[in-house]
Length: 525
Figure 1 (tube, rainbow, N blue to C red):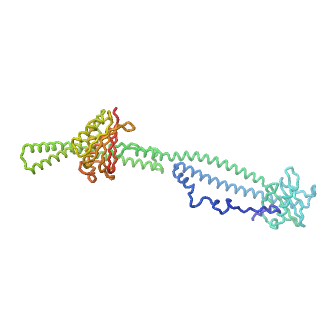
Figure 2 (cartoon, helix red, strand yellow):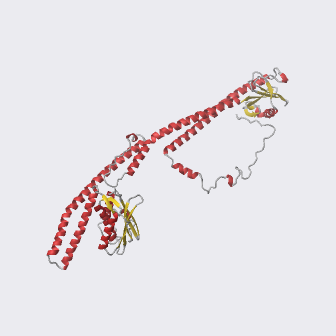
Figure 3 (spheres, rainbow, N blue to C red):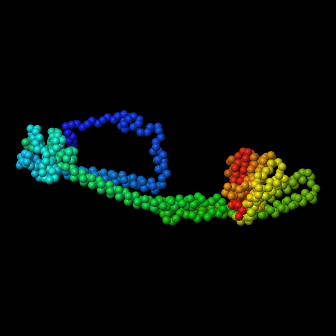
C-alpha cells in the first residue's frame, strides 16, 4: 500500500519563487560554470595526480573504496532499521486506533470527552462525528492527562479525516508533522459513521535512528583510520622491494660500464626476490638480468685484455723489423748509386717506415695506458710548456699563424711532463694537419673558476662536422672528409687517454670558423 501525505493545513504553502536572472538555476552563462572552450582548472590537478607515488595512490584508492562500502552499508542498515521501526510503530498504531474506536460510547471525562483508556503517552486521538462536526481531539500528555490539540493541528487532522482514502479499509498509516511533533497517523470508521484518527509520536523512532547514524559514523571513522594506518604499513611493506630495486638500478646506472673491468656486484636483496610474489618476481628477474650483464661485461673485458695484449705484443715485434728497414734504407742511400727513380722509391720506403714506426709507438702508448700504468706526476708549468711547443711549431711550420695567450708567472699542473707534452703536441699536430695554411692556431693557459689549470688549443679553421664530433676521440676516427691531410686516427684518442689517466677532462667545441680543445688538469700538489 502507498502511504498518503497529510495536507499541511487549509492555507496552501507559499509558491516557490521562480529563479531570477543571474541566479544559480537560470540558463545564463554565468550559472553554467566555465565555458566548454575555456581551460579547465581540474586538468592540471589530475595531471599532478599521475605523478603521485604508487603507495599513495593505493592508499587513497583503498580508503575511497572502504568509504564507499561503509556509506553503502550504512545506508542499507539505516533504511532497514527505518523500515523495521516504522512497521513496529504502525503495528502499535493499529492497536491504538482499535482501542480508541472501542472506547467510543464509554465513560466521559472532564470537558465532555470520552476517556481513551489504555493508550500510550503522547498518543493523539481525534473523532469526527457522522454529521461532520468535530468531536474529541486530545493528546495524552506525559503526566497521564488528556489535553486538547492546538487549532493548527485540528485543521490538519480534519483535512486528513475528510479524505475518504484515509479511512478506507486497509489504508496505510501516513506521516505528518504537527506542532507537537512528527506523528504517524491512521484513520478508521465506527459502525455509527464516526471517523477515529489516532496518532503515535515518531520521536522514539527518530532518536533511535539518530543514535544509529552517530554510532555508524563513529565506528566507520574509527575503522577507516585503522584501515588507513594498517593499509599504509602493509602497502609500504609490500612495495619495499620496489624501492630496493630502484636503489639498485640507480647504483647500476651510476656505474661506469663502458670501459675497463667492471665489478657489477650490486644485487637486489634476497628478501626482495621471492618469485612467488609479483613484486618479488621483478626483483628476481632483475638479479638474473644483472648476472647476465655481469657475465657479458666479463667476457668483453677478457676480449679487450686479449686484444690489448695482442696489440702490445705485435707493436713490440714490429719495432725491430721497422728499425731494420729504416737502417738498411738509409745505408742503401748512402752506399749505393741509385737512379733518380730508385732514389724516389727509397725515399718513399723511408717515409713510410717512419710513418709506420709512429703508428706502432702510438699503439704501444695506448696499450700502456689501457693497462692502467701509474702516472709519475710532478708539478709541470703549463706556461713554459705552451711557449716551448708553440716556438717549435713556428720553426717547423710557417704556413700557420701560431699564437700564444698565457698569463704572467706560472700555472702548475700535476702531470707526467713527457705525457703532458705529448698531449699538447698531438693537439697542435691535429690542428696543423686538418686546417689549411693561413689558419690561426692559438694556445692559451688559464685557471678555471674551480682552480683547475686549463690548457686550450683554438683554431679558426673549417671546423669538425657535427656528426663526427661525438666520435672524435674514438680510435681510428678520420675527419678527412671535412679537413685536408691524413692521419692514423689515434692522436686524439691518445690525448683523451693521457688526460683521463691524469684525472683530467678534455672537451671539444667546434663550429665552422672555430674549434676549441680544452684540457683541464689537477692543480699541482
